[in-house]
Length: 83
Image (cartoon, rainbow, N blue to C red; front, side, top):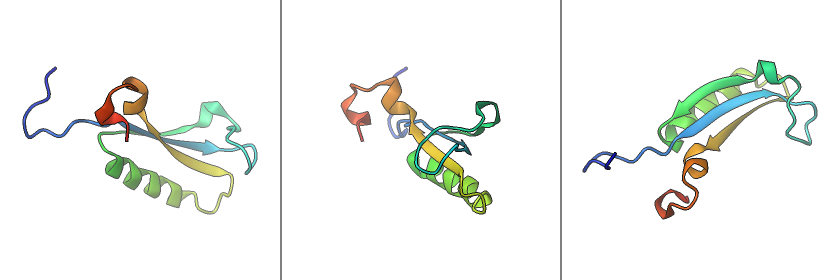
């Protein structure tokens, strides 16, 4: 689908989190209990969602949330999407 003039390109980001097995590695305690916050069309929106989710679990030191740049995985060779 062509990019419409004046329409900002979607740069999809996934926000998810879960409880880690240890503070020094990214290994989840239970994959069945991952919290998938959602997919967002910009980094700014993903960051806001990440921050809100992380603040809800601030008392649990092993709970971590992440932002995955889906647009980089979907089209890694596209120069516009490399940042």
